[in-house]
Length: 408
Image (cartoon, rainbow, N blue to C red; front, side, top):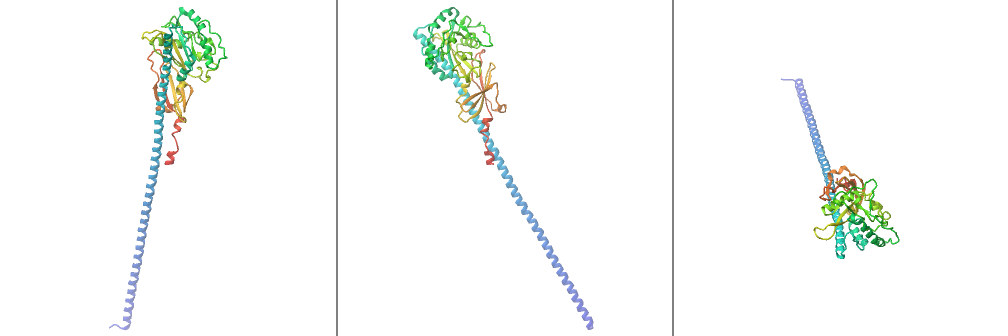
């Protein structure tokens, strides 16, 4: 049997073992708790990171969406402005072409009307060409100039050289139309001087008198009635066939038996007897002019001979007036004739201004060019006209607003 001391030792040993076991259990519990806490923290950290990444993805998607939407809006609005610009310019160009063609056609119609009126008057009175003088010529041509935009209208008979003396006598006797015309203009006090006694050449500086060897050989074309009536009568009896450009066109008119328009040229007669009241802005030496020649027939038979020529002197800038609305600025028109003349006009609303000689348009807009054949005269000797129409920065800038940026 164990004694008391041995029993106590066993008890102490058991207690100590229980205490160790209890301590180990306690340590195990605390370690488990720490592990759980760490694990919980790791899980929480992972969840936070996942939430953060999710939020960032949402923000990124929103940013990309906004940028994409803004970019698409900007380009859509810009494309819309570009479309508006191109469509409007095309409309403007087509209208310019249409009006210019209609104006030119109207000028030929006016010339033909004057020709018919003269033939009809001569037949009714029984007058024989070239001895025909139209009454109220100033009033007749005043309306015709308004309708056609012509600065000057003249009629010249075609006379054989063997009747020159008779014609010169007739011109002296029938020259009262000059003073009558000046009175209609309100220039009764002006003394135009006497009509030259003889037919005389038109001397153009730098040009020689051309040889008349064609269909008009042996003829003269003395200037007769003019509207406006001249303040200097020396223009009367000027032989226009001694002016090279006139001779070229007159020959074509008689051969083809129809009207033609001349090449762009200086028109020397616009400064002979007209200088004091002629629109200096449109002097032919400064601004492009052409003239229309229309035949005058002896009668209305299909085989009638041509006895005279009507001439309408027209400045080209008149073709480009009052076409575009106010505020529509910056359309450029390049006028070219097949004889080598080229001029550029700029349209600022209803006003067409000459920029200068040559093709002066902005080549950046070549792709927008709208071309139009203005004339097709069907004559190898005569010039045809084309219009090349372009936009410019002035017009383009009107279609470049801040709207794309605002909407974006």
